[in-house]
Length: 288
Image (tube, rainbow, N blue to C red; front, top):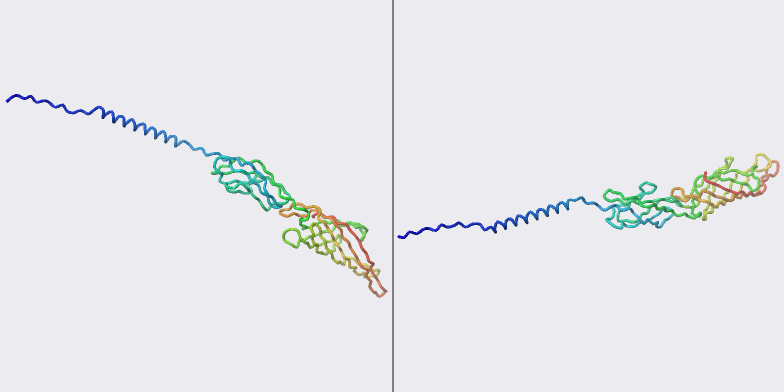
């Protein structure tokens, strides 16, 4: 039996290439993680919202005696505001949604100027105020003035009547309608305390009325008897101004004519009478 020398087997070794592959995978993973981290850093940076732009392009719109309107431009860039604040004389007069670009205000005084500015608001932040815009309500014609309230009316007699050349009457004018110009009930108190009332019918700026009064007495005997006098009044409103929402008369002028008929009365001593008479006066008045 021959001697056979056994051959020793060399155990297999791991290829170096496999170790290099794991190193490559590790490197790629590191790069990916670093990239993600960098992305997170960029994403987490503070976000700066666009500024709230100042409203611009304010232009007056249609107006009436009791209302005004105006408009402005949308923001040139960026998102719309949540709302617009409307400022007048430094206080907030109203607001509109951010989608709106116009404003109308009612219940104003005729022939009056109103200043406005607009401010945009978004997320609680306010823009600078817009440039000032001044708008004006319309001035109605004199014929639309309301004759109302208490008046001092100066009476000047064309010839001396009742012993004096002039006097001042107290007038109280009550319109017969709730709103706007219309006929009035006139209540007059003379300087000596006599009172009478007459309805004045309106035609534009002119008011006319007639009343039969018994505020004079005549006769040669005692007691004297009353002499009926027809008073014809015509006045015109000559000036007006805004008062609240009303267009109110502030000045008037006109005439009053008094006409007395001949009146006779039989007495125990004979016949007594009052002669026919006519007097003219001019009227000028202002609110009391």
